[in-house]
Image 1 (cartoon, rainbow, N blue to C red):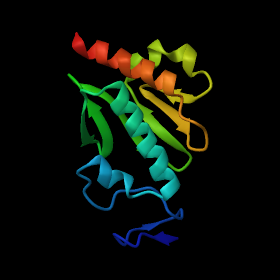
Image 2: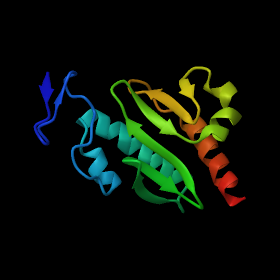
Image 3: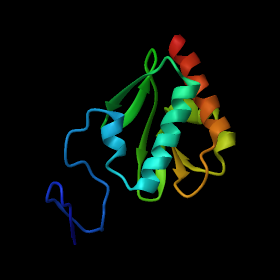
Image 4: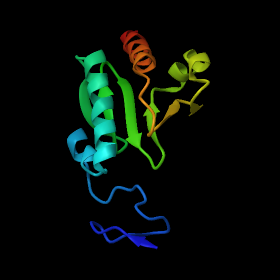
Length: 134
């Protein structure tokens, strides 16, 4: 058993990911993780900001979210991967390019120990920007 030092909740797995307090910003979300994980989250955040400079940041579903005429992307740190949530229609449109990754309806898993696929991320975000214009 493991007990979170912040909220006192007990878990079966050591350092199990959870939210023990309200998160109001992406900065608050990022600091919950280890320095290595923080670096990966900051890298992804900067990628998204560079690709979609007009998008607004917020927390939605307890995850970092970028919005521009609707949700563009959510992301979340997990034990072995970063969940990248772009929506079902986007995953379907990029299915052939996602063969290397674990994915399901609306979600892609990027392994934490591998480089983030900038070009793929860029194409999916641009796809969502266009989709949200309609």
